[in-house]
Length: 172
Image (cartoon, rainbow, N blue to C red; front, side, top):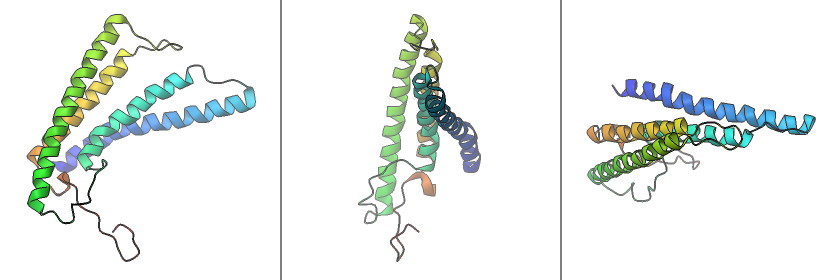
């Protein structure tokens, strides 16, 4: 089941995030080339970059949470017993699930407001509602990931494992 969830997250969230980052890269290349050789920029290039960055960040959240690749403070992990780290992981997943659920609720309210008022970007007149709904969706998926991790705390990667260094000072 873990490999199925990992694959699903990789091919949905990972693909969306990667494609958005790829689009930003090409947008910047074309924008800089246009500025250099044709003295013009892509109209609304900044707006497109901002919207694509939303997808890069929010689509990556569920996958990062599932794989435990988020930022951690692990100074004490080497000396804490495994049971303490499991309790810590439980607390972290409960808090994270709650926070992501609250954030999703707030972003959903904002998305409803965007839709009600017809909010659009200033230059390209792109609707902001779908962007906010996407953000809320990815936040809900992230909350669900943390809830799943609560039920599978014995899974090896559901709590952070301290890195060990080899003789050259590199991660093993």
